[in-house]
Image (cartoon, rainbow, N blue to C red):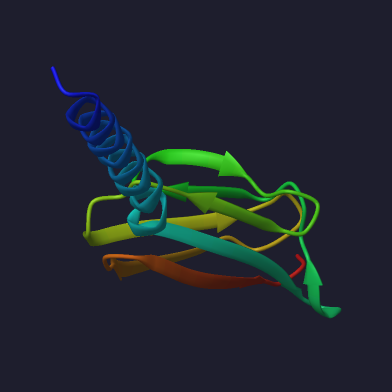
Length: 110
């Protein structure tokens, strides 16, 4: 086999692998994610760490910044519930769209 052909095939194989990996990494950016930020109504705007956020039955707890992200959601209608002991609970029904989605919840102290 001609050396030029072997080198050309090797370059094509490497380029194909790079394109394949590039597509894999792009799927992260189209994961249909929901970012939820939880804040206090009093004092206004303080993040609430440790709040439980439930999205269609799947629960997670907010981090020190009062945030949590749910990823790889199927577009459609979702029920979102947010609460923490000592605060009111809020619920919201909304639509998750393709791409990144954001929701801010404001909880009032009890």
